[in-house]
Image (tube, rainbow, N blue to C red):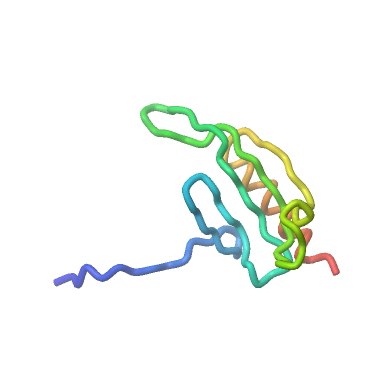
Length: 99
């Protein structure tokens, strides 16, 4: 007797929301001063499963009055999604905790 209703539970990582659109993952809230953007640049096949290979990470300001280029405060490229999420979470926590 299930209702088949869709349940929307927001995905989070270390207390911050995650939003995915195609090959881009936004980590953090637009209500905060900073977010991290992760772009999957390439993928590889691992035992029949497609996984992220190269991931570009950017720490960005969320201020809409700043140009797109000036919003980027840090950037790097990492091998694998785990490594990219690891550096993104460190950067985001440090940026949000600084005053």
